[in-house]
Amino acid sequence: MIRYVHTNIIAKDVANLIAFYKQVFRCRSIGETRNLQGEWLDKMTSLNHTHITGEHLLLPGYEDEHPTLEIFSYDEMKSRMPAEINRLGITHIAFEVDNVEETLAKVIEHGGKAYGELVKADYPNDMEAIFVYAQDPEGNIIELQSWSKKAK
Image 1: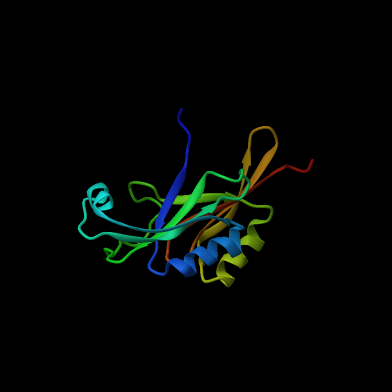
Image 2: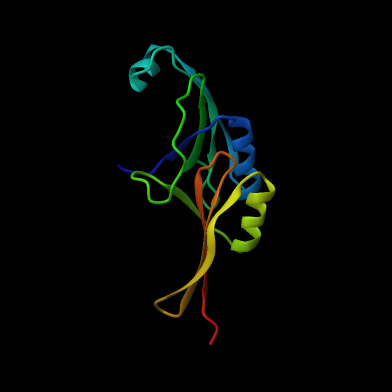
């Protein structure tokens, strides 16, 4: 069996970032909070005296178990490079939303910010997409998108 399980975000302020994803994207708690430490975690992370706290949030539009957004915080964290859309590696997470403009306003209202401009793009089969990138309160990039049939 292979199945996608979660995406992890390491946060400076884990409680604030958890609240942001719950309020803006309707992620929800499923009782999977974590307070992890021990020799097994040190071995897995290749760090000494590792302590992780946080929570798994169910992503909207899925069943009651997975996939989740895992928002954790380490007692000791490294600083990060600013998020950039063209940086190598994983650069953003994406949410399909009913209204991109309204969701962007909600992102900003809850401590995030816009990143780039809102655009409309034509796709095959008379489809139109609206896209914008945003950032959560800790600078992680989020893509907002909505799809509709073009009016004739």
